[in-house]
Image 1: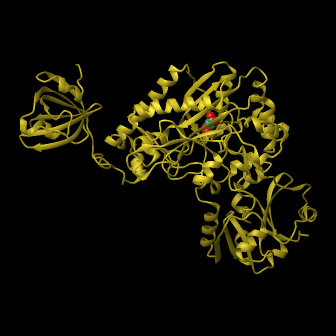
Image 2: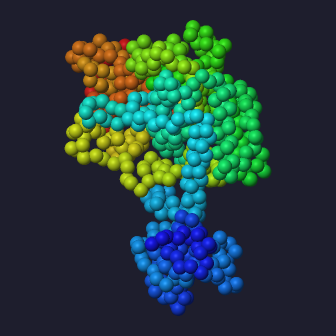
Image 3: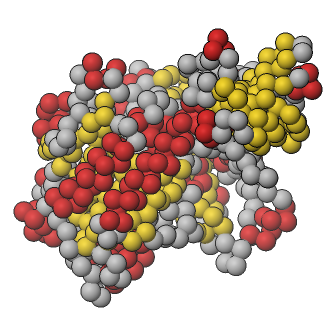
Length: 624
Ligand code: ASP
């Protein structure tokens, strides 16, 4: 059997063909039945007798028949094969389609997301999605073509690896061979691609999957794809030029329209002055409606910024209060290298980072790298890493930089959003074959899902408490607990606060009534000690009362491990984290207490007696 595609029937008038595909539509006129058969090339009309009438929409069929011209009045000018039809002489059902969970001959954008993604393979049959996913493939093909012609080598890098700093949390994978040890999934191939420069490849690229455990927003999943590249013996302008060329070629090849033939360049300062942001939209209203892509470069970014205390990954990286703005592996601009090495004027150091923006989005970013180990080590020192911590996290890079690493730089372009813009879609998910739901569940397959006891045992893993693994926020957990105990309480939503004083002021409550929840290690075990914000913990007294040998405040990492929270957000409910709670008597005698409940922006007020009743802390005197 030689299969003919729907579109190829045009060249086979008068011949017998075998077609295979889906029943797109079916019109049953009794004696005569019309089917539009759909395959990867398009659609063609089949005419047959009532035997065809038994078929239904989306059945997979094979039809044998003769291609003939349609009678004049039956020609459909809207269809590429509208001048012909196939007179079916034989047909067979290859796979029957039961009733569809939703129609797929519509645009589909109104449908419930969870349902659509559960049946993503049906959703993908829509014309709009077929076009978008095929456009994506073509776009990638075009990028590859340019890069191969420029001597780039396509190289894969590991998925099971060690943390790469891209400013997000890592996804970790437990190791069966090393129980208690974990791999991290790559947030980007950053370090490996740099090591490929040490290895002498000089020009590398990869269509790379990156995995970052970031807070979900409607339009963001945990995985994304980027065109990742790196070049040796290169300057900032060389990388920008190469990327601009590859981008323009690929965009034009898939039918995209460019606003500027040469991408304009703004410094970070100019962008902030002009647009108030480092991502901006250069299109006029008219250009917006005609689907034009307006690219621009932004350069001269500050290297460092103050840590945002709300951002866990930043807090972890910026132990000194400073963290990197874009990429810790970058080199500062020449004129700032000395300040960088001296750790001086940190706030003024500019980096070689270049970002590509498009229609108000960040389309990509990269930099020239620090290939001098002193400069890279200094970056981490500025962020507050000790010598030991530097060695542990980037020691392997520092070593490679002492073994003949050429100067190099690169970039990564996000492909998902570019596809969205080129396909004139409004959601990034439209250009991804199997995107996640907004709540982080996978399409079609039900993940994340529990693993078996046996698997856990093999991996040396134990689930500590279901309470902490529920999707509910700590605030919601407390509220629903108090509700279920029928306790009255008051909620506050306020600007983020980081100290007890700020909290008291913003809530309009006394400092004394602020319940400060301190997580301490008592003989190495975490405990929660609750005292008035106006008092200080008397560690000696506490040790004496409870007979502990050693009591110390937990550091930020331990606090996070125990509670999943940042300082200032911890509520006085040790029970929530399965640790014992101790309460100072002075606080217990107040009428009401106030506390931050799981975030820096949410507080709760409750009567002390109710708190004691629900939490049952051990009450004694241990403040100064
Ligand atoms: N690794 C960076 C990122 O993924 C890009 C780069 O600097 O090459 O955003």
